[in-house]
Amino acid sequence: MKPIDKTERYTLTELIVRNLKTYMLDNEMKPGDKLPAERELCQTLGVSRAVLREALRSLESAGLLQIRHGEGSYVAAHFFDPLYEQLNFIQLMEPKRQSDMLGIRYLIEASACESASRVGVRAWDDLVELADRFEQSAGLDAASRSELDARFHLALVRTLGNRTLEEMTEAFLRLNARFDDTDEAHRAHAREHVLYLNAIREGNLELAKKLLEKHLTTNCSTPRP
Ligand SMILES: [Zn+2]
Image (cartoon, rainbow, N blue to C red):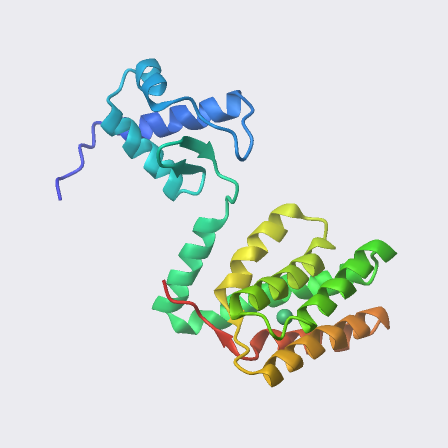
């Protein structure tokens, strides 16, 4: 590695990154919007294609852009993907942190039990329907069952009315996904959803949170990269 030139505050790549971020904000770009073509960006910024691409890759690693080869660069649709990568790696490197990660997920979903107890009929019906769909998914492959489980838990978190927290929760759901290796384990998992929904409906939040805690710590596995 070469020593850093301390007289230069920013590298050319960092300057381009800052410039592109400002461009996206000034143009009120939204997730999914396409950036100008590389040739146009090179001309506007007065930089080579190699250094522009380095800046674009840096923005992609930060979760702000998605580069589609042969198509162009787009404002990312899932800003929190890097959060999952970071937390997953930390958790694998220091397995003791798994209980921290589960603890964060518990705090989020326990708050959601409280907000779910106050939601209207429509949101409640959505929760019950997603619990049913998960219960009926016993014959599907593991990925489909896991997705239906995530949809149920996200619907619960949605009752908090905080979109950012909901998006961050997606990372926590992937971090320690429940591992149902038999039909019996799947049925037990589905039954737990119903049990804590019942406890919420009956206003017994203490019981709902106890059931939730057990639910989150049963048969969890940490995915490897
Ligand atoms: Zn579940």
